[in-house]
Length: 171
Image 1: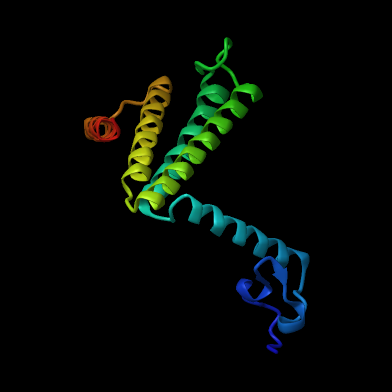
Image 2: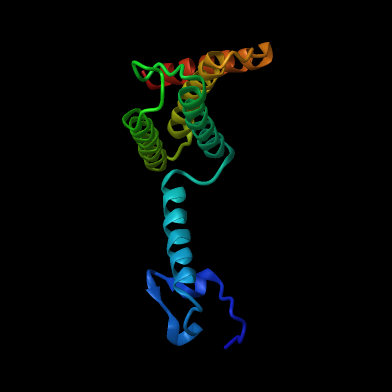
């Protein structure tokens, strides 16, 4: 057994069972918790169809949109989600729940792709949701008084066209 206080996560947890007789006891509860979080994260990413550029872009856009929404409401008091335009925990939770449901739809799309042997459904769903997030980001920037460069507007238009073409494939 290695005398190092660091153990690879895949040695600590395998199939959800702690292998302390083979590897030795982990140094802390923190190590076990990190291993559990890593395992759950890996399973979720796998169910979402893998950690590719499309999923990374969607998650990045979701995080930026949420943060910008907080800034619009908290700093500029211009939110369209509340009567006063300020922060609301209810509006914040609704936003997080919507993003969670978006990821559930991507998960279902990834599973449909696995069944059909393609990657069209998942990628189409992700492109559609990236477009929605980008439009929201641009709207939030507008509420902050930030001008939007034409090249970004053109990129959003291109994504909208891709989104429309993916809808035609499904029909």
